[in-house]
Image 1 (spheres, rainbow, N blue to C red):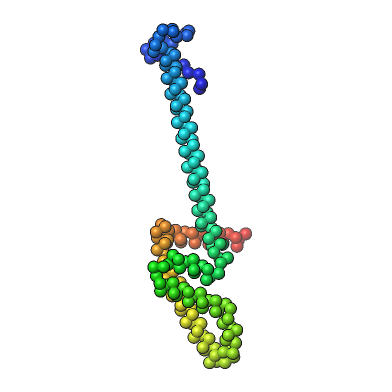
Image 2 (tube, rainbow, N blue to C red):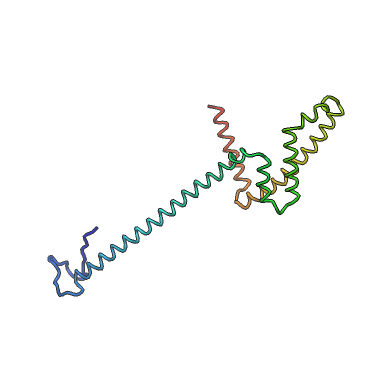
Length: 186
């Protein structure tokens, strides 16, 4: 499209070069035509650059979304509960009771994981000792349940703000079940 042929409306095309003395003749029109075509191509180029930048941004956003939606679970499960709770409590500063209960839950969890059986070895040898152990475990379990229920309420509010409905979660769950069943059948 680099060669332009300019036609004057109402006239027949000329077979030879335009007359030199015609101010609005082919040379003027050709100049404007080349300008128009050149500027059009500049606009097309500009739009292509915008498209490329926008598409790059979308790809980066998609990659970041994948990282955010997949990696946090893997990344966070590598951390201790204490670190996770410290990180979370920075977000939950508006609820001091929840922060305190989370700290207590971490303390109890660590006690269960690292000291419970060692410290209660003698208690385990008698009915009364086992009853004390069970009472302690029930109290700890009640705290874990209470904190989890409060966190579930906060999580539900977050999901609602993000537009994640119960129906979407149910669809996702059904998809997971279908994949699990397909794996079992293969």
